[in-house]
Length: 173
Image 1: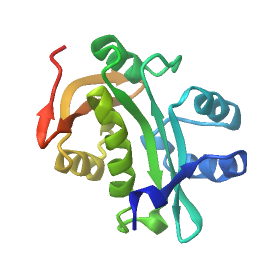
Image 2: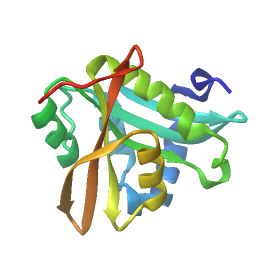
Image 3: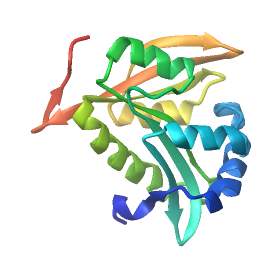
Image 4: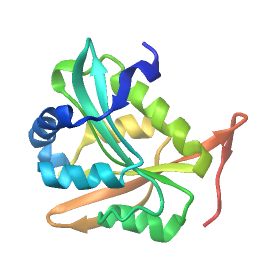
């Protein structure tokens, strides 16, 4: 499976499925309705669906610097890194499609895209804990740079710096 074959731009026809997937995992994400999703799609640098066996198996939203996105986590990264990051806001893979390499394929694409800016950043819940996600991200080379607590959640803010010619390309900020 080629990573490029896994993603396609989200369309209006995908919205009901995306909202369903978000709702199933809302405890690890944040609530999303059609109006909010439309606003996010308008601000996102990537709003893609994950396709497997011809079906929408998940979705991903990524925001680049300069977005008007109102996320506290995004704003923290923007204040710290300026224009040297891409922010992976959310990725969801339907449970029926797990263990097929879809998340890894999506991350390959998103990380390659973010490498030009220097890093891909994201957050993972640590309260309530999301141990599978933490293990996945650590295995891919993500490191915690900060923790934020709000609304009954504590998240680990993580980054993975870009790599150039096999060496890490890290900007001091």
